[in-house]
Amino acid sequence: MKILTLNFLTCARKLCKSSNTAFPLHPQDAELEIVEQDMNVEFLRNILPRLMWEELSGVVGELGLPALPPTVPTLESLTEKKLKAAENDPTGMNVVEVEVPSQVALDLHRLLLETCVKEGKLVCGSCGHEYQVREGIANFLLPGHLV
Amino acid sequence: MLPTPSTSHVCFDRIYEPAEDSFLLLDTLSSASETSFLKERFSAQADGQDSNASGSSCTPLVLEIGVGSGVVLAFVAANAKTIFGRDDVLTLGTDINSFACQAASSTVQNAINETKSSTTFLDIVNGDLASSLHPHSIDVLIFNPPYVPTPCVPSLPLHPNINSKPTPTFEEESHLLALSYAGGAEGMEVTNRMLVQVPQTVSRRGVAYVLLCAQNKPEQVKERIRDWGEGWKAETVGSSGKQAGWERLQIVRIWRDGE
Image 1 (tube, rainbow over the protein chains, first blue to last red):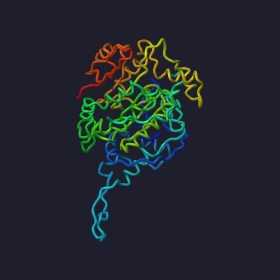
Image 2: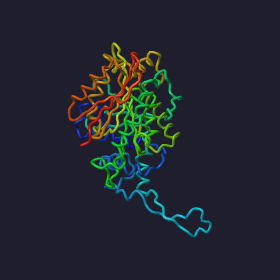
Image 3: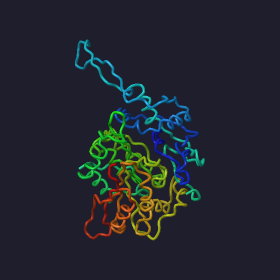
Image 4: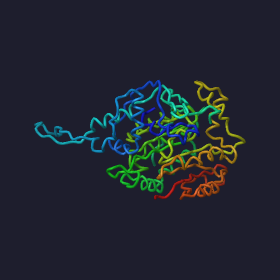
């Protein structure tokens, strides 16, 4: 399960819907794995406004991953200009300027889309219920008495 | 016509096999009228609340409830550019059947790889309807419910045990399949539970597509949705089996007009 998915999930119990501690869910005993994905800067740019930055920072800390910047990165900081040898130029003397993903973008991509919880649990901060993650699939089915 | 994603790896003894209803959803979502509606609603250049600092609109999040084999969500992920006019689209699914969650993950990821689509697939979550979703986060909700009228719906309290078995018995597989089609009274017991969750699940720009059959009394269902007030609308935007077959199907679009 991708870290970005946690940005959209909350406790499944009705009781917790109005509680502001039911989001985000807190990963515990998490076994992480990296699953490589193609980089899409346009996607990062348009997902930034949807990220619950503070909550996400908390989750990142709980997982023991490198801390996020304190504030949401600006759109401009996602790309940088780089000089590159022009194509079809046998002399190698000419350079062109190209826009490439910045380190900020690469780090965000790695965290949000490539870092996955393979095994572990997600704990609700309101009711304490633990949701198991097995083989990358989070199980939100509640036992009968909690529905 | 856009290609149908492959589901050849899916075990149809315990997961719903794509059928006329699934294909009606594919046809409706990719129809000229729906793609034009969705492109306008989720235009990359849109302004307003859902936009970032440079004026382009936020990534839309598509949720399919009860993904089954994953064929519908995979189709949306693979063809987002045609359907939404943009490919920075997020896809997420839920299913009550853990085998469907595993299978659908592969279906969606394979379809994305095959078409080299640059959409982003999140996950398939094992859960009941949209109960685990953060409120108002979904932009496009798709639901092909268990709509067949049956004397009762499968027991939910028994479900977690069956769901966690590595190899279910024949009876247990029947239970898993029944969850995908058995709709109880008028075939509406599960759909009604979902419909009441729609207003709190979707975003301000959110749209839901729900499949109904004739026995579900679609005209009454649409009236009930319009009675929610606050500008809620419900219209039929796709249908199949116009002959008097018992399984006449239609897709109802549920949405609110812009601010």
